Length: 216
Ligand SMILES: [Zn+2]
Image (cartoon, rainbow, N blue to C red; front, side, top):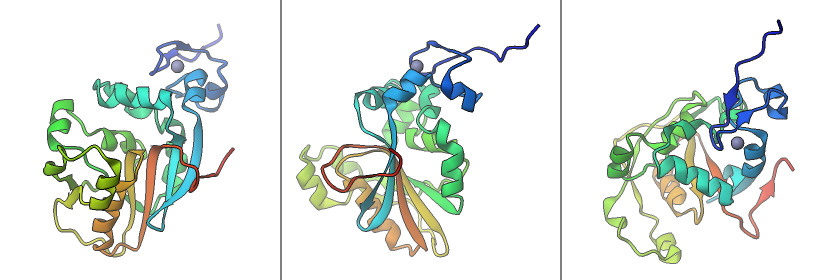
């Protein structure tokens, strides 16, 4: 009798993953089916934020939006792995010398959810995570206008004093839209004098310029 690998179901659409699935041939522990993989459309976009190098794995699309919402808004903890699972090893190699600083959520949101979704997404990489930033509460009610938010820049504060000299810092977040929060994080991190700063996000909204695709 031929020994078959155990069947697996896609973590997003729950369909059984075919053993002959192209993705499965490359990665026995695949968590999502090739259709969902295709819908997520990994692009590995390189861009810059305040002159620092930044990367986005996906371009923000409807499928990513729904999946992130399912994970973050519906507390579907199982989905933490689907965004970077297939690239965790490559990301770890690429940023092996880096310490991750996650963009925080509001404390109350994390408490309600029972986990911090950004930390959960990036935990898989296996690099050190420093949750040193905190979201400033009074901005929660702030205007919805992206322009005025962009001007303020002050969404975050440092949770505890820390010396980042001789450290390479990778700021990580889920979705990059205006970049205001990431810029706020950079402003704080810069003052702690790390050796390097880079940014990695799961998905970035499409913009006319500032977008360079690494892998077609
Ligand atoms: Zn699927």
